[in-house]
Image (cartoon, each protein chain N blue to C red):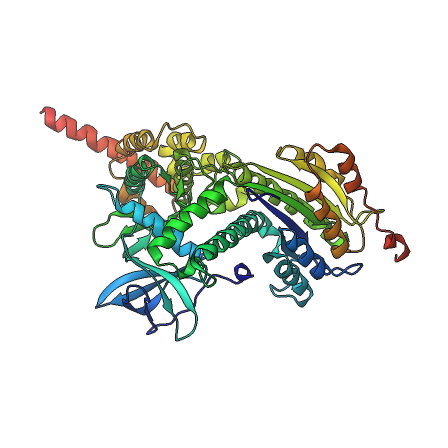
Length: 249
Length: 313
């Protein structure tokens, strides 16, 4: 990706991966390609706010250079747009700090500047945050336990698009689900900036049993390498079949 | 990553924080408020009380102090608390955090006032807010996170002040921070792009919130805020101006102010007294607010007729 585009994966899940590759190491690999991995863990209504089962949520985000939040389904809307925005700002901050270090030396970052100068740097970062292009790939866990949370997920994505539409920079989003009956991961919506297409996608959600988070992340990340409008390549991306998938069932 | 951590910095009464750049030392008195982006403490320096905002995310401090610095340039109307200092400081010899210091606006928030204000005062407060918002809009900014908790009625002067500039956004950009119920996008009545009408929408919701029936939470199911407005009887005299604000039909803050002022002027003379009475009666459950309103306005009309007759004599 070029410097003008911020690329993110947003994983929405409610539990641990239980099959296939380790999602934490996959996330780390994705981050090395310049794609941030953010994770939102969705709690059951009767779960406490710090359940041990969702530790993986934080680990995946940390490895992916992104942000994680663990919330109840009711708070998804607020969280999805906030995480996306914060992660984008964080990416820009990292980029600007790198530039500062090239000018002022190794130890320099935004915080080592006096407050007045920092204010000017901040304005540049805000300008970048407002105008840069943003690509968000949303990867939704559709395993059985997510079923009653799907309407909240859809609502939160509608809300995200509302926030993205308000920016000056252009944006593209894409939606993938995992798992499906035959595949690890399936493309539901190819890169688009048309929020209206979201409504047509969601009824298609089928709900499966296992949670191959690592493999799903790996396959979904490939979508960033496909140039838009390249029909042949695109076909290859969403028909990914993990050969180990059926055997291990 | 850093951002997974909550931005709250916990400070306690008696804690001292000294800036590393400007060397001013502050003593923490108590917590004033806590948000998703940091905490605000009451602090003292040389026996003066100030408000100190501190966050684990330095970008929050820089962004907000930037806004306050810009407001300094505004003439006439005070748009936010005055900015006094921006610095970094070590907490109890440990971590270093960014903070900024501003004027302490002493008073109660509009949400704390709701139970005790009458319609006339509500009209006045709204009018004052619109005047300030208009200045802000002329500077090219939108307040963004306008809600009763961010509106303070100063204890001494009774002036209406806007605090918490976290949502302040340049016109044309995406609103930086908002609260669900006050957000135009949430109610599907427009975008989240900063324009003057965004603030007017939030202000309209503030007015609806003054209604004791408080139906917004229920209405969030079907997202029909206009229905809530129709059912909010207390604010009926302002209904048409509120509706226009919800639909984004006021040309600017001044246009809405004119309509608010007009509606306030036309309120029954004894609007405030009625309200106090109704809240006394309400405890006994004898007469509801609407009944009191109609009875006293009848009395009001009779009195004014009598006044004219006496003058004619």
